[in-house]
Image 1 (cartoon, rainbow, N blue to C red):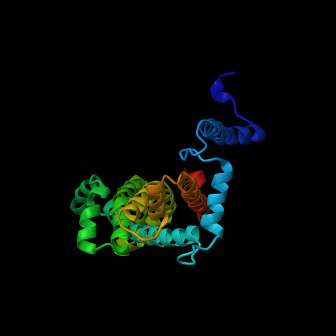
Image 2 (image 1 turned 120 degrees about the vertical axis):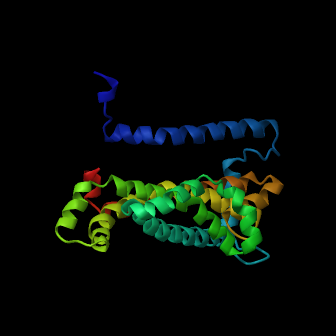
Image 3 (image 1 turned 45 degrees about the vertical axis):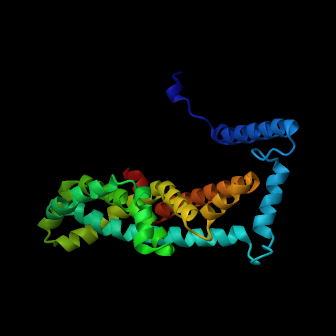
Amino acid sequence: MRLINVRPDRGTALFLAVLPFALVVLAYILGSAERLAENPDDKLLPSLPSLGNAIVKMAFTADARTGDYLLWTDTLASMERLLSALAIATVVALVIGVLVGMLPLVRALLAPFVAMVSMVPPLALLPILFIVMGLGEESKIALITIGITPYLVRDLAMRVEELPREQMIKAQTLGASTWQMMVRVVLPQILPRLMDGLRLSLGPAFLFLIAAEAIASDSGLGYRIFLVRRYLAMDVILPYVAWITLIAVAMDFGLARARRALFPWFGGAK
């Protein structure tokens, strides 16, 4: 039997999915034990009990100075910035992407500009944003928005252009206006693709969020990571990195489930 035709059963698939994570954890435990055996004060790979103590301290123990539970305070601050930027990017990308994809005049006007903007490294704009908008929330939200919106616009525009031309011709034959075709023909087919685009944008969005918080912020997950790095506090940094990853995975999973629930036909269409 050819390897391409071998499909694992459910139990085997679960084992294979868990195996890489187990190997990473095992490698960490062995590496940590070896380094701590040579130097008990080593901070690069803290032991699992040290990681557990740090999690308890950051998540379940009130800070002596502020009285806040730092992990949850940082998470709330970061999520407010991230969700605000994602909401703005979604609305802008949906409007411009559909218009660029549908209307040749708008495509001629905006497609080259959007393509050019998408090539600008967003992190290079961070000093400009801080100078123009200050160090407040607006500049951080703007960085995330600028970082992901052009890609969402281009992706949606291409998805609109890929829709069968016959659908537009039939709609016009039945007397549909441009607005009606946009609402009744294009939008229902583009919305599930927009949700998939958002899923792919989560990684860059978190990257821009952490970068903005690391440079100029007094709260947030990125701020905390870069604050404690001065003390080589890997027992705090590693749980924060894991927590950020879990949040991103949960958001990706939630968007995937929402897309399946709202547009059950989309999977079959693909």
